[in-house]
Image (cartoon, rainbow, N blue to C red):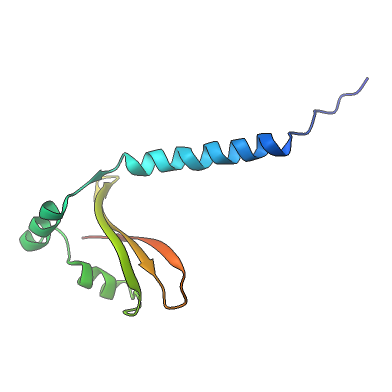
Length: 99
């Protein structure tokens, strides 16, 4: 009697990896993010730091090209989610505290 469990096929492994990757995407999209006006009001009122201040405080290279910026509530804390292109051409997402 053969008691070995069958090995999953490559297609099944790929499907599982894709499902896990997409489940993470849904969670990040469910975050409550501020629009541009709300971000400006939050900076002006002192609720959050400016983007420049956050980048400087976290030692982000000034030569990094900013691709996009969002401010979102993540677990009750406002964070900047920043897409950057580094000097060596690498695209990265940074999540930095806005407060």
